[in-house]
Image 1: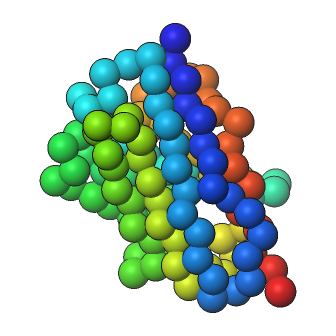
Image 2: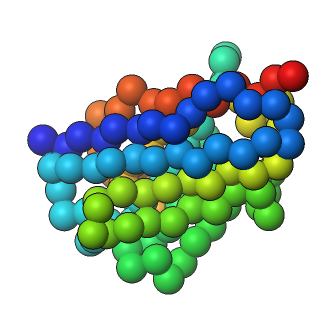
Image 3: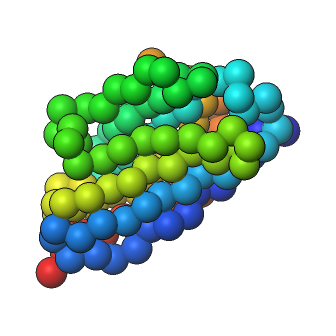
Length: 118
């Protein structure tokens, strides 16, 4: 079955950096676009960044452009999110899923908590 395991979150000061990882299994990883989502308290889950199969297309929401970079390593079935210049508004639980426009799978991993605070 599909498994998505996110890691790399933590507490960081404003302006700091984190690198999130998502290890995927249970499907042909290289065939699928992959995305990162986040959900802040009392907010809907939102798509943050997506990368196509093969990595030729990338998109980010406006609020993270120039700060977050999504990448993938198909040899490790892993997608990454490098987050720089973090802001308190980036505080959320971050999840990954397959898909470029919408989540491919109904089931989600446990997510990884990112807290940006001084």
